[in-house]
Length: 118
Length: 109
Image: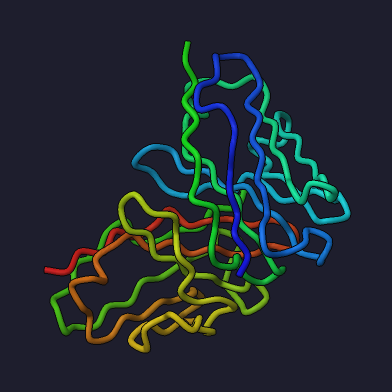
């Protein structure tokens, strides 16, 4: 079964760039799935950030598009997320999830809390 | 920007039946939106329950079912159990984009 694990700094300073990595175990990124980033603000609902296809093609949430960069490293079987110019509003748990094109599969990564400090 | 709307909260008695809905600001939800439903308990990552409108995962209890109802995606829980108390989220596909609903907090009381 595939396992996903998010990693990255738990604390980022305001106006800087948030960088996270999702490591994929038990499956190859090259198998043709979409790899999603999703976040959840404390006590709030889920927000789709965007996804990257194994080929590198991306689709981003319009509300975040100007600040997002996603990339894929097939040699490391990892995907990454960069979110620039962060503010306190970007404090959230960030999840990665595999997507077949019609479902987000199980399991997601356990999530990683990123706090933006001033 | 597309908005997906769910009931913020619902309450159901144990053994009862409840339907959660998922509406799209773009119009009627259809199978092409591949409605997904997720359950989230406190401190845990969301767990998929239903995909592509009505397809249940192997771990999804039979009392959970998905459908399209009155232009919305719907998740119906029958014979509700105390352990069903959780947050439920729908996800709709719009071509390359995905949009989550705001979530429904289900209380079993």
